[in-house]
Image 1: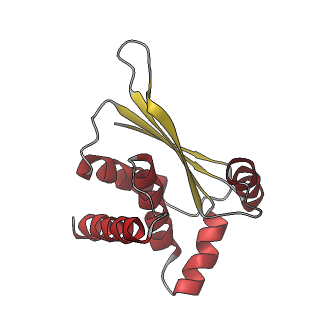
Image 2: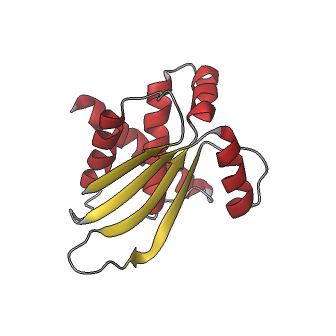
Length: 147
């Protein structure tokens, strides 16, 4: 699996290698093929607000957005299949972590797992779906912490 993390922030608020390990763990535990590529972008509030408005019609920054490829994106030859992009706003995560009373690192991990699960077809529009997605997020975070 190929994981690309792109940051538009300085200084970096997290250990990029640990973030990549978590992404790889999520893809593995979800049974995603090894020849898959995932991109993760860390953006500031301004960029996240622009993306949120452009793609969701919602004003202001959100915590995480996922942009999946339709029927995974085709690639030439033996290049990896692109799963999609997860975009995270660390500043939003920092505020949410303070509100929720846990570490910024934990909040960023939850957002990464949440974004990847969206790319894999999980959703939270309906109440039952939201419960299933939240339970899966918790299971993955717990398994990662225990591993």
